[in-house]
Amino acid sequence: MALVQRIQQRILNICLKPRQEWDVIAGETSSTADLLKNYALPLVGIGAIAVFIGLSFVGISAGPFAQYRVPVGTGLAAAVVEFGRQIATAFILSVIVNELAPKFGGEKNSAQALKVAVYSLTPAWAVAVLWILPSLGALVSIVSLYGIYLLYLGLPRLMKSPPEKSVNYTVVVVACGIGVAIVTGLISRAIVGAGLGAVPPSLR
Image (cartoon, rainbow, N blue to C red):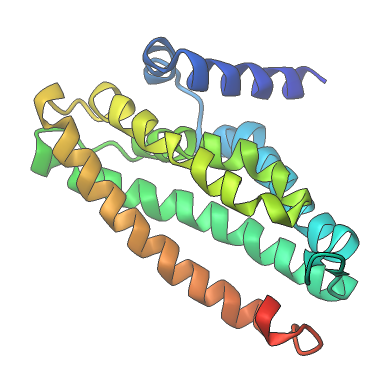
């Protein structure tokens, strides 16, 4: 219960008062293992469970009065792949943030870069619970955009880049992140798609 409360508080703080929370995060000395075990993995796991329930029990809209539910095995596969995709995205994004830091006057620090990636992805991960209703997928995407603002605020605080370079630093990281999302999305479709043989093509 204490872990759940800590995660909830961090989500609220980073989303509602990000400037102050980034300063707190910058001073934390938690290890990568702790960051994953006590924050990223539980949060991503909730979203993955929502994907499974949404696909296999709630169903995908197949028209005004119809819902298509994918086989449980396929739903589980989609959830596992999505879980892996989100964690991989965080690590890849942290590498991008870290490698770009000197180009924008910042300091390379892999631990801080992972914090930037993980906490910037918080809005996307927190709202992923809405995948329990697949029809709300567009809303998930819209809310996730708030992470760009969090990234903008976090880069100068954790990577020590000059504030005047934050916009350019953020733009380049986001551009790279979009590329990562496209590639990981295609890989996910290729893996999960093998189990979607019974799903109508229009819903894949």
